[in-house]
Every structure is written in structure tokens, then in C-alpha cells.
Length: 555
Image (cartoon, rainbow, N blue to C red; front, side):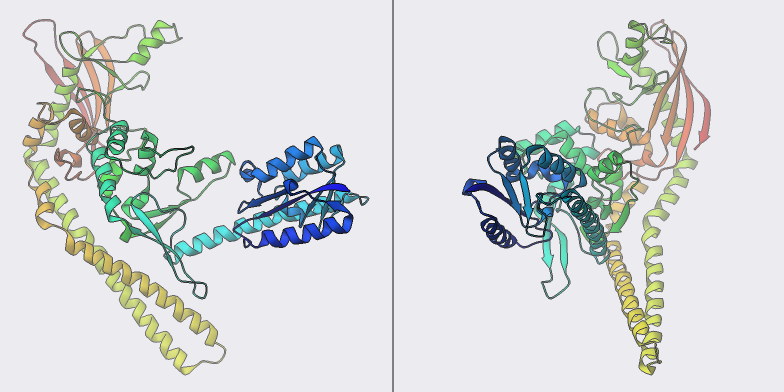
């Protein structure tokens, strides 16, 4: 008898696992009707895998089918539906070409038979329908995910520090919620604290692997997964740790949209109950690439903070010789290889020149009595008043919602003709709005009550001169001091070298961050001032330094 093969597949998103049994039963019956024999080795089954093109590599049975097809091991392929073979238009085109080239017969239980004249038209229509089904399914899935987020549920796999819990059952509309895993949340806080204090991604990953902390990423091959610097970076960038879930905000979604030349609009969903770290810590650990991120590494407190004003590269440190010095290795390379318009001379700048420029700004401009008192006043208002204002707004909104509910309830009791359905829907929507407002009010009130007043007052009472004296005296680890400096001075640029012993710097200082203590207790406000500073010295010993602030402007 003639030989045939059978292919069956189900996708867990649209069918039950028992669908495989149903497909095999119908296809075997069809093979018997057509006079084909089907050997067990030519029954190919892919379970719980979509038929879309991007998943072809995961369809192991389909790959074996194609391999046997090309070797001529059977004369016909029988499927329950053509869509079991593929969903993508491109794969349908490949199948059509393969059928015409190999003359292998394709028969489906839903009416396709390549022995019929003009089968290509019917096959193409089935392909278009399958592709349309994929698009419709994708639209419904996206709509469903957004609906779940709007209802307070969560989507996707729970990240490190959380666990997922199913809510509801088949008879009840439910979904998945996340809750904080307190055991792992301790490590989340530790990771953010290490980064906040200036530890490098490599150092953090090494610590986690040494402590035996389970990696959230599954291993690609055999063995256990392990922490990599990229894993730590992705975790630090996740906004859920500050209580915000961003739909279309993941690196995967962004990269996919870029490949497909689509523009995504991220949507934020507040999840205050999932907050693990404070906003100030999260934002400090996620400094944009264009500014001065603190990356750890380097023995000197100024390593990695200064930028070359010619090429925009990060200036390197040379620790040999009589004193540490800064230079631009990128400009030096351009000069060595003869790049057009390369600098004619690349010289070294003493690290002490930059240090004295920073100290001049700190002592004379950011820490005079008037500025410190004004900053403390603004800081106190910010710390003690920001929650109260929002709480009052929420109380007013809740009161308005309750009055609206009372009005709707009175109208429903009067049962105005023709408005029953409209009033019931409006009442349910108003109830939902009131619930959301009450939830936010309850959470914010509890958070405000939990604040430690003594800890909040500490930044206001910090003596700035104590802070300055600790920066360059070696009283703290280099990476920790560097982390503070990167927040106080988000931009440090060597503007020009007018002469051998003269350097001009353009420095942006964040006035609020100057009260940040070295233990990272508070980052402060974000007012910025741009300075142009000239530092001059000479060859005579002992060395004399002259620092002049040429310009200062508020940004």
C-alpha cells in the first residue's frame, strides 16, 4: 500500500491537549479511506506550540516531517486542517513550492486535496484565513492583557522578588496577581543598595553567585543559571520595583518594535503594593547613558567622572608618576593613527586640578549660609508636605464619587423609563472608580503614617561642611564616594587647555544632591547650576593652585 504521514499540532492558547487525539483519529480515518498506510514513525505531533513563523524552530516534529519529506519517505501528508501545518503566509508559500517540487500529495480533513485542479487557489485562501486568524488572535490577546491590567491583575512571569498567584476560577472572572516574596525582596533591596553605593555590575553579580542566590533567568543548556552583569542591569531597570508596571516598556518589546519599525506607547499602571525600593534609589541606579552614571571600578574617587570636551569620551586615569593625572585615550588614539582633524597634542591634567575645581564650587557656591538655609526650608516642605496634598485630593475625589453614587441610586429607585441599563452601567463604573480612589487613599495614608520622622529630619540637619571634608580624604570606599560625586556633579567636562599649566572645566552641580550623605540615606532635590572654572598652577615647588570661577548660571 501507499505510504503517508500524519501531522498534528495544538496550541495551548486555543485548544485542549485532547485536540491531538481528535486530530489523529480523523486523519487516520481519512488515510484509510484513501488507501494509505501510516507507520508510527511517520506520525508527527507538536504539542502546545503555536503555528506562527517565529516559533518554527521550536516545532521539532515539524522539522522531522520536513526532513522525511525531502528524503521521499512518504507519498502523502494528511492533516486535520491546513492551519495545523502553518499560520504564517510566508510558510504557506514555502509549503506550496515544496508540494509542487516534490509532488507529495497534501490532504486535509477540511477539504484540501492537491490532486484537485486549481488546488493552489483553495490552499492560498486557507493561508490567508490562517494569517488573518493570527492577527485577530493577537488583537484579542493584547486587548485581554490590557483589560487584566486595568482590573488590577498582572501579566507575564513574575520577576525576581515576587511570586504569582491565581485569583478566581472557571465560573468567576479572575486573573493573576503578584505578591512580594519577602525572602527574595531582601536581596532586591541589597542589589539596589550595592548599585546605589557605586558597586559595579560585575561586583554585584559575583556577590550573588558567591552567596548562592538563585538566578531569575533559566539556563539555556544543562546546569544551573547564574547571575551575569546583564541580568543585574535588566533587573535594576525594571520599574515594578518602585511600584509601577509599564506595559510595552520591556527591553524585548522595545527591540521587537524597532525591528518591525513600529512605535510603541508605554502605559504605566500603578502597583504601590508591589514597591520594594524608593524612587530616589531606583532613579539613581538608572542614570541615563548620556549623563554620568556611576559604574564602580577604578581606585581613584574621580575615575570615570570626567568627559573630554573634544571627542566626548570618558577621560582615563593614570596613577603612575608623581601624582594621578587625567588624559583622553580616545583623542590619543586618533592622533596616533592620523585621523583627520585629530588633536595636535594630547596632554595630561593633574587630578588635583579637577579636585580643587570641585571643592571651590562646593565650598563657595553651594554651601554658603543663605543657600543652605533656603535649601533646608524647601527640603522640609518637600518631605513633610508632598503626601498631605495628595491625600487631601483623594479625600475630595472620594467624597465626590460617593455623592455621584447617591444621585445614581436615587435615579435607579425612580426607574426612569428607558434608562435602566444605562443607569446600572453608570452605577457600576462609579463604584469601580470609588474603589480605586479608596484603595489609593488607604495605601498612601498608611505609607505616610509609616514614615520615620527622625530619619526624614536627618537630611535637613546635615552639616554640609562635614560632607565636603569626607569626599577626598579617603574616609569612605572609592566606589561609594564616586557614587555620591556622580549625583552631585552629573556633568564634568574638560573644556580646553589654554596653556600647559591651565585647564578650564565646565561643571554642572546638582544643588539638592549636595546633602546626600555617604551612606546614601537621601539624594535630595534636583536644582542644577552650570559653572565654568579655570584652574592654574605652575612648575615651582611647593605647588601653588589658583582657582577662578569664570561663569555660573542656573539651568
